[in-house]
Length: 137
Length: 137
DNA sequence: CTGAATCCTTCAGGATACTG
DNA sequence: CAGTATCCTGAAGGATTCAG
Image (cartoon, rainbow over all chains, first blue to last red; front, side):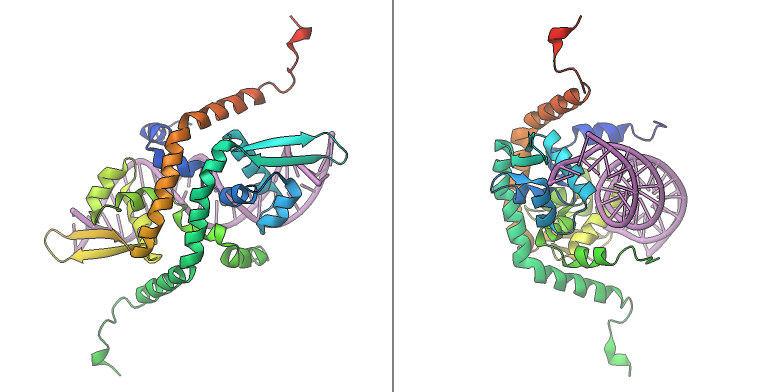
């Protein structure tokens, strides 16, 4: 390991602009979903599992751990049988909520526009050299 | 390929909640950086390359293409020598700007708190069974 | 109910070199 | 200047199984 491959890269990843830093911890495919789902009060593991729609048990656990590690979630274990674990947002995470919903809101508003742009772009890409329909059939 | 591996998964990825959709296009390590950098007017390729700090030429190109494809950036080629290409935000992307800066702002405010939380979490993890120093040495 | 462990595939992304 | 092409590695994430 460390075959002169991660030298400057390491420094950049660790030190780089805050931009990268933000996304690095909200970057997961499920982080935002979980944060939003947990916004309206403590949520149980299974609740999240069913609320998120498509998440695997593994990824739920992993993402929860990461969010907990970064101080965005607090994990409360109720020593009962069966076990009951609740996750809630920290104050820090609550501050993030506005931006997050802003993001989701934006996505919903422009969902179709984006799909259209995508389709248009892809269609154009399939016609590398056909900008002149005047000449043919 | 397609060994009954991506069936339900596909449907989920394509159709799933808007949450996943948002992040899927802002998810890249550099997308947000580029969007913010381009917020204050048309930006040239090289300008971005030097502004972003750490991005490779390849990733810059790829990310630009993806953002263009999703209708967040417009690419304007000035047929000059040497070539000059400018990227600017679409109105749609401008609406996103507030949330994005909100995110970055949040990150800067809590950068140290997150680092601390992380350190604390990791430290705790290294002491699986030592919550009681009253009993020993 | 709430995970942890293992295996495996895909893909983002870095390094490097070449081009119109 | 503004890319494109190729190679390669690590990390993300899905499926599945085992456990307290």
